[in-house]
Image (cartoon, rainbow, N blue to C red; front, side, top):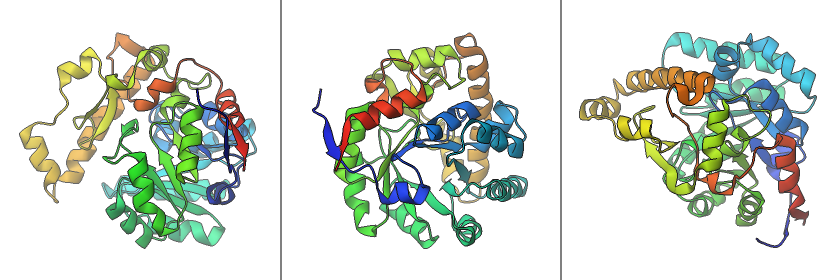
Length: 332
């Protein structure tokens, strides 16, 4: 056990998001239900709305879902947009959801998997800020060309989609951009949180830790799998979405295998077909994850999680998680 750490909890990120503590409850499909998003924000961090989860898993009309969250907290919430070009129908829907989010007062946005410029152009005139998911310096440079305000640095310990670089390597290679950096991956306990801030990150993003929260409405089997797993049980597979995704290594994953087949790999590398292949994988995984959420191990053992599982040993309210993390630190 490390001693209590002296770190500064007020950062450029907390000022951007207008929140008390530099903690993001990351957007998760299918786990980002309104109650979890609201609980993280109410506790002084910020919960991020995942629109596919909100609408297609938890059954809310998008605008009414945001308004429901507003009945649970008056504090800031964020919105996640996947901006990779796919079908026009998907793009139009994302643009419509962005407009609704802005109309409903959302001002913090996280983009991923594409050029964030069109989001920035809509958000900035209304006083909003945009952070973008990146896994290395090359993608950070592209995101900065799009006018973003900060970087979500997805490392090799993250759950779901992950990067190849360590948290230490990412902060060293990206700090010269002068933008707030968020450590995304491997934050399971208060020591991990304090260590990330000591490294120079302006905040952390947690997903796996908040799946094991009371307010998260995922199946109990999923939460139990997180409590039982260690980092040695976390493996990366590209058979879910075409890019590496961290999951718990269950018998189902072992049978499925970790690598896409040779034809799929070729299609994923081809500039003309890669978007269609990723869409195919994504739609397939959306269905599988939704069934896992509803039926647990009675369906398939398909659990996305990161190496932060080492620090997770109990299910507790989101507010208690944030309070414990913050209580471990002393303001600098």
